[in-house]
Image (cartoon, rainbow, N blue to C red; front, top):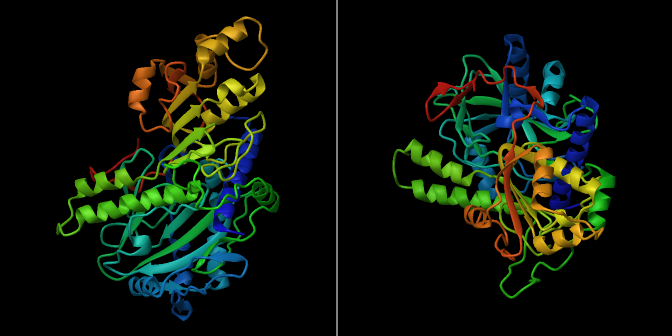
Length: 489
């Protein structure tokens, strides 16, 4: 099974797990600090820190090796140069003793419900790794990156020494693109959206910075059992056979060099497009900062924000559309829609709640019946971020509306007010229906100006609702780098 199919499988499993969790809790829109900001942190008690030191025992010290993975996992491939750099900058550790594992599992069990509340779904562990970072490290996890692979790949990081400028820490851009640094007087555990948020490890000034990484995957039932698959283990080969088989059966299998038009390049899947876009912008950031001596932090922060891996959805777009940073959701397979699925009353978007910055409903709403329309708008409301933008475009609106008013029973809308009312009923606040204003502001959207004269446009944002909110604590150790102060907003 290839990595792209595994990533898509995890995304669909995540949506299924999330839908089940929301139904059990009687809500359609979950709200938590993690979903709103992208992180949540806990203080580690001294006895937990003492027990977790067993992950760094001298007798289990090892080196990073590309062969260090279980047979039922897909490996992370590394060149000899990359492997040497990883071993120069960090000290790696193998399987810890049972007592240390028991301490980790007991602590995770004590916060498992809180993690579930923050994520909004059940979860389990698919790999645990431990290593210590040396001073001056700047490669691999110590360079700016986002993890990618799946939008539901979330991590817990344990810092056994209080994270600060001297001991080392983690730095990241939150969902609102504020630059954050984990700083505390006590040891910390932080849950953060590693798949999407740009982040990097901050090495210590002296000594080493011990850290434990716990990578999670969605599940239909939460489990805190630790899995040690190896430092080179990327992802399990088997995530959910039923979902994988269904996705693979409808998968687009055209040759990579096929172009749908003379000017269109072959398209990559969402995982590749998000990853490549982030990597390209990080390279630009490094080039801009190279040779400047002491890096200007404001300039660096600006470049990281540019590289921030935003998630954008194009729902109903043509299967040939595929743009870096955009995920195309629709029923027709093509170069820009590798894993298609229908848009109906059972559809679950393979995207975590509150993570999408922009959604473009591209010529699809008019094709949905009433039940499907209500459900799809509910999914749009679930996945859009609190600060997100929704743009709906309905082609040939006037002619379609006239036919409906004259008694045509086909899908569509009788008037603009009807569509606006449906959006407001789904939890959105309509900002404007002016086509020129919308097309100018969102000029980067795929084919936003196609059939502009005959189309109806609408720009809306999420209305403030009273969804289930879980926000107590979780922020005491995270500072906003731009001001260097604790931020508890």
